[in-house]
Image 1 (spheres, one colour):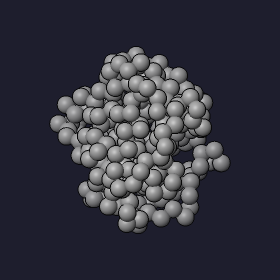
Image 2 (cartoon, helix red, strand yellow):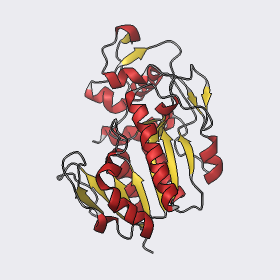
Image 3 (cartoon, rainbow, N blue to C red):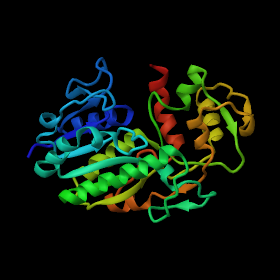
Image 4 (cartoon, one colour):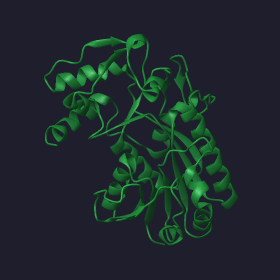
Length: 291
């Protein structure tokens, strides 16, 4: 069987993952809403928006060994399953050996600063998190039906080149918002890609994993550290209650928890390349200055 990855949603994380798989001599293909998206020519792109009409994917999914889902759900759950159930079901019956679904640690809700591992009771507060739980359930039912391994990865806040506080400072969009006691974990996109690959070539059975770094921290600390790397002043601090934020940005400040990532590290014998945001930002700095 071909070593082939199909990725629903070749966006920030999906693209990095496809490129990592390409480096390991895998064939990669996936979907994008942007027909003009510039990517490595080794990645076969298919224009796809499940909310704007049917796109048949049976040929593209054929012979795929790994299926990666990196498209956000809506209130009815997974939009990919709703649009292409038959194509996916046929692929699960014939070639796909493992499905990897990218979810979020937001499904745990607010832990009031407690530690959270995979046994922690889910308690989604936002509509976004509730949709993720529904999508997790839908993929679990489908993979159980066809006996295909499913790994659900609950991701902390994703950052990497082009999406980080150094870039925000350069662009003038960084905010230094202070909310007492608020911390959250992050995860570098390069570590996500490597974890997805390691799972793909493993014999690990269906399971749920928290994917995060080892250093939860207040968001203002990250902005201040990025400013020091740039040898510039951070933005003036703003108290959370006075901050002007989007609904999604505000939701990040409504929950605080310390994510435990021990399970994935033990299962894979994994050492994160970027176990904390300081190492990640230091490595990103040169790339951001040269963009």
